Length: 89
Image (tube, rainbow, N blue to C red):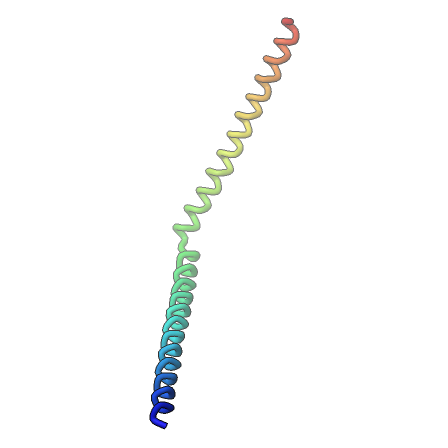
């Protein structure tokens, strides 16, 4: 009988340790999740961040247009040079 009591006490100790550990992980997860959501909501409402994002979008669009103009100029120049080569030979 004394051996059975030791096994029961050990089993209760292991189960309670697992429960405490699982509770700690769950608490940390939900605390971090709620904190992250609060920070993302506060930063999304920041007008300075929105204004900066708008400026970055405009710069990217302007850069894309300029790159397209440069590539069109290169295509035109290549076409002229290839036609000039064909006429010369």
